[in-house]
Structure formats: structure tokens, C-alpha cells
Length: 250
Image (cartoon, rainbow, N blue to C red; front, side, top):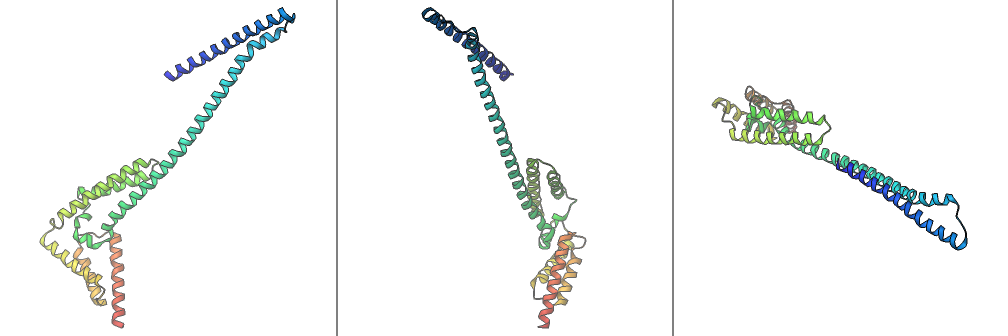
């Protein structure tokens, strides 16, 4: 509102200045014309008086137009530069958000692939627990934010996931295996021994097979192995059997 009033006042002042300059020039030209008539008996044509009045305001109007055009061009260039800057900042923000997202998901993936961690902190696979379930909900929030166009929402979703994961990790470490019965803790101890034998690299194929079966049997009903962890465990068992067979053959 104030800018609009200021522009109107400036326009009125410019018109008044143009008219005043025209009148001043016309007055001066009239005096010079009168002096020329008095001294040389020469009278300039009538249209020159009109030109004397019109030329100054026209020149002022032309200069004002050039100034307005220059100002508009400057604003357009500034707006384009700002858009480019904002686009670059948004792209950089997306890259940062994606990097943070990847790091957070890698941290979570350890509990989906590392059987040793799952044995140590079995609570991390108990999705019925509200603290652990919050990690899954926060992960879904990341997926939803990725479908949008606002990097700030993705940053906020990653923030929520990081907090949920840290809280869950601290919670699982604090609880450890304390929520399990003595029988369940005994089974996890058996699973730990079987896993160590499986990863030792010095067992025979028969021992590897026995350790693998013992491990899966001990975890049943206590830890629901994620698909990736089960696949990784199966691959390790196959590698251990192959190494054992080569050692026996050698």
C-alpha cells in the first residue's frame, strides 16, 4: 500500500517537473525571441514556441521511460538469479537429505542383516514394542517425504527416524535379554555358540550343517530373522561348508 502511494506521488512530481521545465524553457525562449525581434527585427516561427514547450517534457518522459525499463529489466534479472539460486539450494538440500537418509537406513539395516546383533539385542525385532515400532513408522515417513517436492520435509522425516533409531538402540541395549526367560536366554547362548562355529572357518561341512540347524532352531520363537538376515546366514553357511569340504579334500 505504501509503495503504491509512493509511486503515485513520484509520478505526479515527475509530471509537475516536466510541465514546469517546459514552461521555464518556453519563458526563456520567449525572452530570447523578443530580444531578437527588438534588435534584429526577426520573429521566429510560431511552431518553435510549441517545440520549446514540448521538447523538455518529452525528453524528461523519455529519460523516465528508460529508467523504468532499466529498473524492470534489473528486477527481472534479479528474479531469475534468485530462482536459480533457490533451485541450486533446493538441489543441494535434497542431496544432503538423501545422504542423511542413506546413512540412517544403513545403520538400521545392521539389525536386518547382522545375526550377531540380533542375538545380542533381540528386542530390535520385536515390532510389537512401541519404541521399536516407532522406527518403522519413522521409516514410512521418509518414504512419504521422498514422494514430495520439499527437501525440508525429507530432512524432518530423517530427523524423526534418527531420533527413533537412537532411542530404540538405547532401549534395546538397556533391556538386553532381560525380558527373556531363562530357557530363552539359554537358547540364545546356544545360538551364539553355533554362530561362532559357523563363522570360525575351521569347521567341517558336517559341523557347519549342524551349527546352522542348531542356530535356526534356537532362534525360532525368540527372534524372527528378517529375510535379509536369513539369506545372509544361509550364504555364510554355504561358504563355510564349501571351505570345509576343500579343507577335508586337501
